[in-house]
View 1 (cartoon, rainbow, N blue to C red):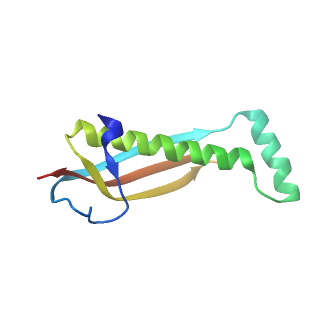
View 2 (view 1 turned 120 degrees about the vertical axis):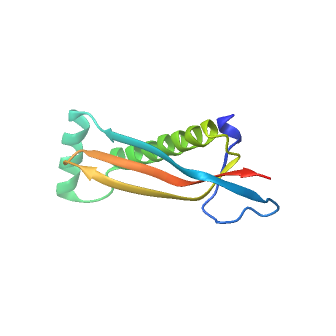
Length: 107
């Protein structure tokens, strides 16, 4: 089950021996609607945190991790080690987030 997949940024899982299955990914690209983009542009003039974009990135990160876990579960993994994030912008209003790591199976 996907929720049982342990995801860790460390190389080792204390108390567990495992074999490497392979690389796994979770990807998503998200954007906000036009009204929120206009609001963000106005906030850009005065400065400060643009909460809509912060929330969008938080949601994108969660979606990417869920997809990473699904990818690992489909490979028969028990956990993902060395998980990392990568992100980038596409155009002016889209963000892409990738979660990636190494799927492992306990032995």
